[in-house]
Image 1 (spheres, rainbow over the protein chains, first blue to last red):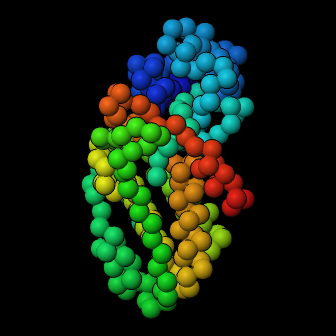
Image 2: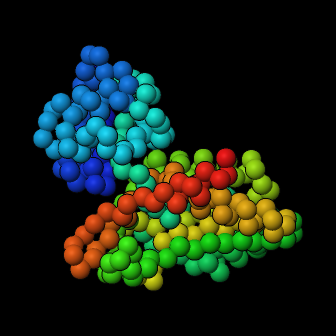
Image 3: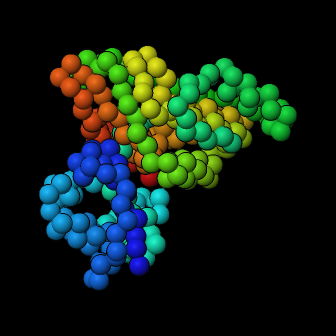
Length: 85
Length: 152
């Protein structure tokens, strides 16, 4: 029941890793739940994923709102608003 | 249709020729519109010595495919090439290329502008600039969101 969590750009630098695999905790049903769960881990995660911070999220490589459900095996990504082009 | 996310530079002339000389496209193309984005040496009041472009491999290509599919549902797009670079870039370097071929100029211009506006807000790229005060991540602009909004 693991999920893959990816971080990019300033979020990646803050948490100090680009990818981690975590056990999907009981009660974590959506991207927002996962963000909240990771914040509770404290330190860099609490800062990088702080409430009110403007973030974009993707599940399985599609940009989605925070209320989107997550399933075991999913790839969930947190990143700042994009600045390409 | 060609989408490429690459470190290497690109050549506008070669990309246009690849479309207009492609036998598969016959002689239906009457208009080709293109856009190139370049690295500037100043941004938000600071001089920029270099830039690093990070992206999300896998999602980037998928996002660009979706944006192109959306454009094709709105306008006549006979052929299209989108190239976006990543890695280390310097001022005057080319960053992004969009080439759209249509029967007539209206569709080519509109689809090209739409593709750039959507790419700016939906494709997972991030720019980090080197300035005399140190490195900084480029902030997203409200004007880019507004530019994408007007196509809704």
